[in-house]
Length: 443
Image 1: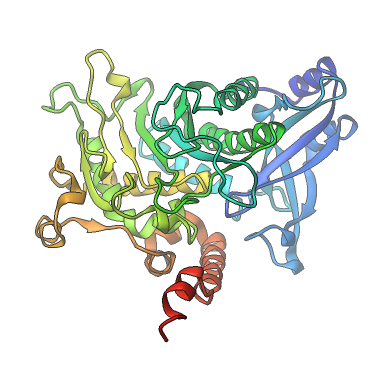
Image 2: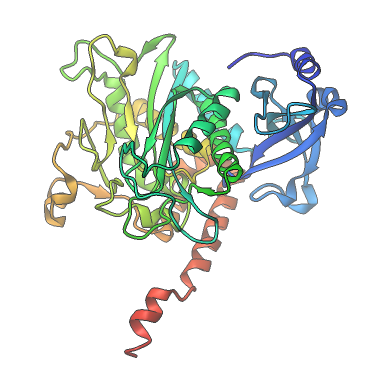
């Protein structure tokens, strides 16, 4: 990330004929909130921030204490490429502050910063992440009418979204998001654009940028892009498999040349922490009712709490080491979905891994068998547990978790639980088409 001063920003705005600056932040659910200021207001915004009503933002303040400040982060300044070049539009992501300029405990970006501070105190300089966000293109937001019948890595006329992906990648790169590769995914009309790994805070900023860009470019082409985890029954859902590693300086602490499988003790403890705490943090990385329609056996979504080298039915996969690629040694956590709040999700995974390192959790043996093919009895015998099977169960586990309280903090924790309980209650009382079709004719 380019380090910029306030003076750098003011010069860029003048040089690039920027008239409007969009200020972004997220609510506790990860939805991007935005308001625009003009170039004449920018100097004051960079010095003092911009005030707004926090009581209108999901999970933020109560009405009697609603004054908040959005303080733009100069390092996140970038042009918005789909807007006009004359009287152009730029964007900055904000840190949310209290009126006395202290960090606001309800800001998801601050939650991730606190997690990174914990890692720093434990001696780790970098928490590198490489998330893979999958999504669908549909003809509109009213139904799941697909654009193509392509499959994994298809390069045929079936893949009508190639131009969409091309424009999306070009826009992302113009906004400073480096792209590794893109391709058609397994399900019809499902796609993936992968970002190059980077530090966690930058990556969380990139994830919210990615989601906005994908939707904006889709809209430009007259179609709809969705990060809903499981929009089509009987097809694979969309995941956000997240590769991660911890570095000290430029040394990857997950790599050990003397270890038989090149995994260090730090990596093993970290993986053990993720495995041990996966159930209780699932409410954070899979936060919707629909998330648990994806987390079912048989659709490449991991539900069994185990780790493996090549086995994609396991919750955590450790890609094989290639000589000379020490820095690439990492673990891939496969249960997150792209509808999560990336700031909270990255903080949750980091805290879980750090718990493992701090308390020296022992990692179980890797599971190289296809876990979907084991019987319930066989899984029980091997001590393999499963992720929660509904939002209701995930809420119950998170509500009782000391770690989740630590991750989210005293402000967000009760509000997040309350929001999710309401969502679960709203869902539970619905009468679905399935129920009408199944029960109405016979009872």
